[in-house]
Image (cartoon, one colour):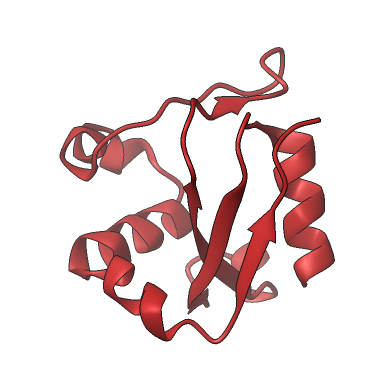
Amino acid sequence: MVGGLRREWAEEIRCPTRARASLVAMLNDDSSPVSRVHLGLVFLVEPEGGVVEVREVEKLEGESLSLEAMRRHYLSMESWSQLVYDDLVAGAQTRVEKSPLMVDLEAEP
C-alpha cells in the first residue's frame, strides 16, 4: 500500500518539496462493473510548499483548485472523483489528525 502510494506520487507528480500523505478514507464505489471489484484508499497529500505539477503532461493534465472552483467540474468527474470531492466538502481534512497512516513523500531529486 505505501509502496504503491510512493510509486504513483513519483510517477505522476512533480513536487520540489517534501509532502505528507494522510490516509483519510476508504473508497468503495459500486456504480460500475469495474469499480465494483476495486477498493480505494484516499490520501490527503499536503506539500510543505512549492508548486505541484503533473509529470506526464503528454498523457495527463491537472491543476490545483479550491473546492469551490472544483465544483464546476463535478458533473464531468468519474464517480470515484465525485465521491472523494463530496467527502472533502464534508470535512475529510478534519480526519488528518486522526489518520491511522501518515507517509512522508520525498521531494523530487
